[in-house]
Image 1 (cartoon, one colour):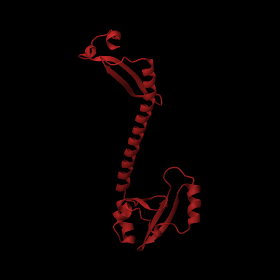
Image 2 (cartoon, one colour):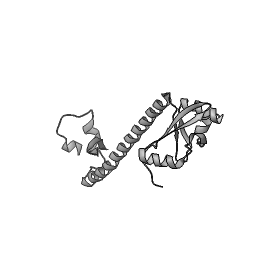
Image 3 (tube, one colour):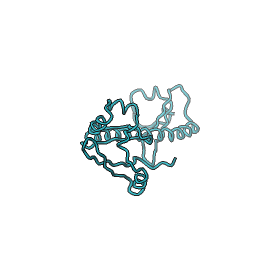
Image 4 (cartoon, helix red, strand yellow):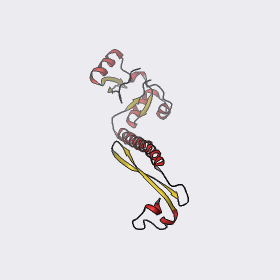
Length: 178
């Protein structure tokens, strides 16, 4: 009961005439305070009791986890955007493919090479998740798999219009067992 229990100075204008009850709990996530969950009732509303405080405490755990997850997703999106900028600005060709070997990202340097092979609009290729051209895939898939497992990457050369390019393939993220 705010009016009955508050003995300090006036917190804010008209508080004693409008607030009936206040309760708050900290929002902890991994021992870090994310904030405070504060609930206020009007002067003529129900006064909070221990059951209400217990319920608010349970709710605060879920709110803290939700805040923490939203921050993780925000950080992930920011890191993704930064990576896109770095990859797009490098002079080295970079092509990212999914597990089905469909192009999911291609930087401007790689667009020049791929468009010379495919003769189509590269933007349509990326947006449609079309397969990567076969000439960019190593010929010896057995060596490819063994080297990926041993070194974490595979390096090979391919020829395109009398220019030799070095290709390097490395998995992104953690290994998944299918």
